Length: 478
Ligand SMILES: *[C@@H]1O[C@H](CO)[C@@H](O)[C@H](O)[C@H]1NC(C)=O
Ligand SMILES: *[C@@H]1O[C@H](CO)[C@@H](O)[C@H](O)[C@H]1NC(C)=O
Ligand SMILES: *[C@@H]1O[C@H](CO)[C@@H](O)[C@H](O)[C@H]1NC(C)=O
Ligand SMILES: *[C@@H]1O[C@H](CO)[C@@H](O)[C@H](O)[C@H]1NC(C)=O
Ligand SMILES: *[C@@H]1O[C@H](CO)[C@@H](O)[C@H](O)[C@H]1NC(C)=O
Image (tube, rainbow, N blue to C red; front, side):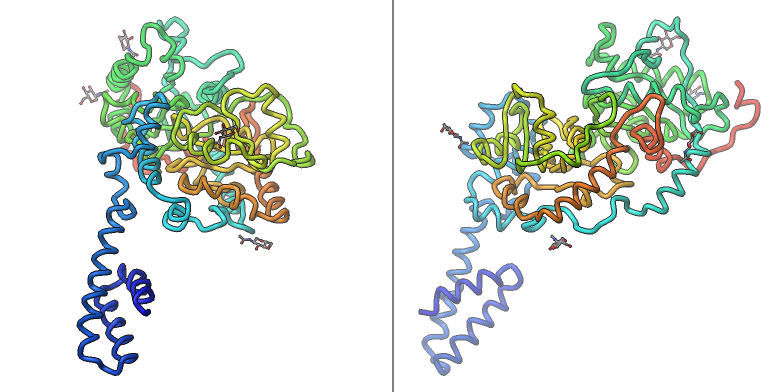
C-alpha cells in the first residue's frame, strides 16, 4: 500500500512546499496507475487530508511553538511538578521554564532529533587554536600593557563609605572574590594614572559585594547609592558628562549587580559593566559593550599536577538542585555509574573528583555563572558547559569550543553519548588546551602576565572609547 510512503514523503517536504508535495503525489500515482481518472482525485484528497492531519498533529505537540512565548502557556504536568519542587521565582527562571515545558511532552527520540543544534558531538571543535587569533592577541596585548591608562575616582580613608569604595587589604576569598581581587590588584598596577586627561577609562570603585553586606545600603539600597554616586562624580568632575559615562566602568561578580544601574539609565546603557553573571537572556547585560569576567574561587599555590592524574570517571557534577537544568541532569544521570552527578555537598573533597574525572560539568543553577568552570580548568578537567545563553568569560579572546564541550539543555538525555564519542586522542587534545588557558583563570597578587587581571584589562582595552571630546584646559582642572 503506497499511502504510508506518500505520507512520509509529504511530511518531509511539507516544510518546504505543499505544492511540491502535490506534484510528487500526482507524479507517483499517475505513473504507477497509468493515468487512472478515479485514483488521481482520490489520492489528492487522501494526501491533502494527511497533510492537514499531520499539520494539526505537529502544531499541537509543541514542536513548532515560539520558545519565547512558551512560559505564557499552560504548564505541562511535569513543569508544575518542577515549580513545586524548586524554590525559585518563575519570572527569573523563564528561560528554564522554556526548557522544561517544551521538552516535557516529547519523547526522548523526538527531543533528540528536533532539538539538538550541535549534532551528536556536542559543540566542540577538533584541531582548533585556543585563541581566535593568537598573533594578534599577543601583539595587541603588548600595546595594551604599554599604553592603557585608567583613572580611579579617588576616595579618602575617612569617607563614611570607605569600606565600599576602597580596595580590601586582605586576600579576597569566596565565591565573589573576582570583584575584590580586580580592584585590589588594579589599585597597585601600572595602568593607573593620576592625570585624568591621559586616561582611556574611568573606574568607579564601588563594590557590589561590600554594598550588599553594608547595613546602611544592602541589596535594596544599592540603586540609590549608585545614583547618588554618579550624581556626585558628574558634578564634581567633568569626565562623566563628556561621554555620558561611556568611558566609565565598574566590576561586579555577584549577579545582584545587574540591577544596580537601574536608577541611572544612561549608566545602564553606556557604562562598561565587567560582570560574572553575563547572560544573553537577561536585561541589564549588553553583550559586546559589557564584558564577561570569570567567577573564580581563589586557590593558593600552583595547580596540582593534573595532566598526569588518572581520570577514570567520565564526568562529575556536585551541587544543589536549584534549576530545571540541574533537575533534568539528576533525572537522567542521577544513578549512572559513568557520570557522577551528586546533589548536595560531597563528603570527600571536590578536588578528588575534579582530578579523577575526564569531564567536569558546569550546569546553570540560579545564574549562568558559578566557580565550577574555573575550578575544572584549575584541575585540568575538561569543562562541559550546560548553561544556555552564557556569554562565556574572555570569549572574544579565547575560543571556548577548542577546549570545552558546550551542550544544550535539550541534550541532557544524550550527554553520555556526546562525551563517550570523544576519543582518547581527541580528549587529550581538549585537555592540553584546557591547560593552555588555565593562566587566564587565576588571580595573582601581584598579577602575572595573562592572568585573570591582565586578561580582564585586555577586555576593557577592547572596549575603550576612541572618540573623546577634548576639554579646554580650564575644564580639565576644575
Ligand atoms: C577529531 O580529530 C581526530 C583525530 O585527528 C579524528 O579522528 C576525529 O574524527 C575528529 N573528530 C571530530 C568530531 O571532528
Ligand atoms: C606588562 O607590563 C608589566 C609592567 O610594566 C611588565 O612587567 C610585563 O613584562 C609586561 N608584559 C608584557 C607581555 O609586555
Ligand atoms: C555624595 O556626596 C554627598 C555630599 O558630599 C555625600 O554626603 C554622599 O555620601 C555622597 N554619596 C555617594 C554615594 O558617594
Ligand atoms: C553635568 O551635567 C549635569 C546635568 O546636565 C549638570 O547638572 C552638571 O553640572 C554637569 N557637570 C559638570 C561638571 O559640568
Ligand atoms: C535511582 O535509584 C533509586 C533507588 O533504586 C530510585 O529510587 C530512584 O528513582 C532512581 N533515580 C533515578 C533518577 O533513576
